[in-house]
Image 1 (spheres, rainbow, N blue to C red):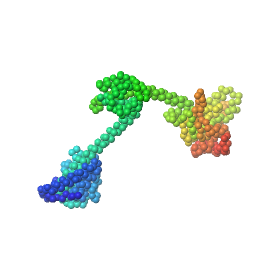
Image 2: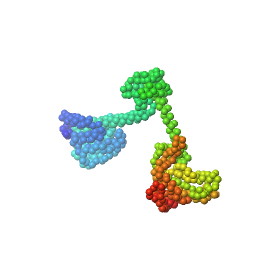
Image 3: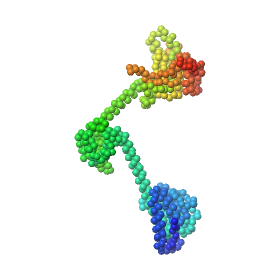
Image 4: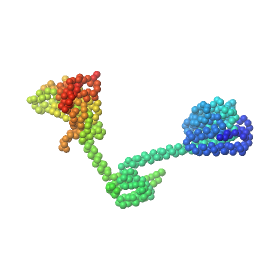
Length: 548
């Protein structure tokens, strides 16, 4: 690569000069022009700002024979008051990463938009143009386009009086060319960004139209089909080949003449028409519709066509029917559980009905049985109404404790209560903890001196509680005439067996429940018990209270 030597003498760059300028020779002009054309062609190959900056610095250093070249660009594009950051460096010297816009050289070049030449480091001004202590001469050129200011190009040489006519002419011609290319790159980036935003808006608009259940069709000012959404394509049998055809050609045989006349009237007069009802002979089935016709206006309100919004009234009626069925099903679920679950659990079920399957669902649940001890002897010879009164007073308290702790009242069996934790919603470990906590709270109420039940002749009644955690099936059991939500399974039988051996005031649990509750409760291991259908005795524990 040729170095621009000064065959014509020296010319001042507006700062200092060591010799008087001499007339330029034809050879010098040709040399500058040749290098400018070659270097300019390299700029045209790039469109990225960083790549353009690299070409600018590399070519400027190579062609001028400089020892150091750097491009500093404003940190805030287009703001000449912001600091300048080093964007590209050519040379093995360590130089500042940033330049202050108030530096003498930067302020001078930025204000005049002229190239500055420094011939020696002994000059009394513009010494900051030398980026390294070993440098003796410099040239600083503003990177400026007619509509944009980017920064400065700084070239340094270790030799004094280095930047004379040829080098200066090249820089004064090449840097503006690069600045113009940088401006084009900036405009191209802006154009690409706008294009991306437009494409994103188009995708967003298309996704909205595609998700609409209503049928959207647009026609241009001449009555030709311009657009249709997915719903319109599926239900009206529209395809890409229909785009550009007149509305009357596509729908002429499918709708009555009143609809065609209404569309023509709006197209000619730009008037809105709402709630036009009719029937379209669609490919799959007749479509009972309500049609809204609205003018489609573009920039500055210019009329560009019509939007036709069809509401499928047949599908709407079917949807309303389905919604009514869903409402009835939700009401049935609520009626089924409201009496036996806390309001919080009922609301949870209503919010997430997919968590329960009314036909039957396998669960890991904790089954709880509580039976009154001494009931048979107490009931002998008593008036049935008095017995019912005593039971209801106890059941009212027991149900409150169970529901408050998240349990589901499965049924009342004489003087016994069967409750489940883990149906219809399942949370295995917490279910077991809630069940044991409930049993202890119930026993506390039974043994309280100020209890409001088991009074008078029922004062000696106690409650024995047994529970077990295991798999079971929960769902609707019964016939078409009578159906209840309940549970069945071997784990229910185990819990019932434990309740039968629990003495008054005791809470008996199995090892399965014990493992789930961990160390939250104080327990005492009892002698294992045999349960019908089990080959080995079942380890059991007496719950003494909450662990401290």
